[in-house]
Amino acid sequence: MGQLTRAAVCAAVNESIPSHPIASHPMLHTLTALQGAEHLLITAARLWAAAGELLTAGAILWALDTLARAIRGTYAAGRFVGRIAWPVIYWTAAVVRLIDWRIVAAVVFDCLKVLAVAAYVAAVMARRGLIALSAAMGRRYSAAVAPIAPAAPAAYHPAAMIAGELSTLTCAQLRALTGCRRKIRKADLIALAVAA
View 1 (cartoon, rainbow, N blue to C red):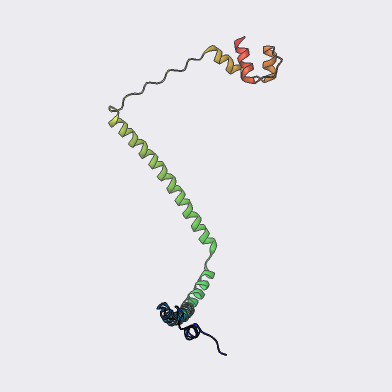
View 2 (cartoon, rainbow, N blue to C red; view 1 turned 90 degrees about the vertical axis):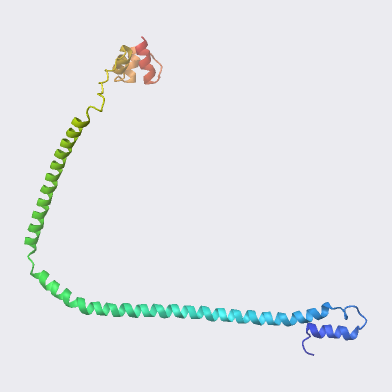
């Protein structure tokens, strides 16, 4: 016996039970039509997946071909530059071999000395120019600036002066001075000595 399909089962049900209400139901014909649409959708999905795979494979092959062309072009450019550059490198090496490097070192050292002297002279001249410019601007704009009175020296309290002198002593010396036997902070010992 072959494989039973939904349509064969429905047909068998329709023939065996003609008075059954499902046999005359309009939904049965719709299910049969949907089966055909289902097969059509499955086939279309398979074709779409195959086309996507082919498109992906084509894109990968195109990228590999582009990479191969770039490699070939780089190789050809390297050979071309090598044909031109090899004689230049060869003759440059021959000329470099003839150079007396002691003379070159002396010339470079003399150039560095000249540059150092020029930088020093430029700095001195810039300083003089800045001083002259500052003096000229001071003469021109001095009337606009109010003179600043010097601040009066701060008056010190005698206790603060004594505390300053006591801060040079150690804690042991301060305890001996104050007669305190407890171990307390140095600031408290100084306060005790000033108060006494």
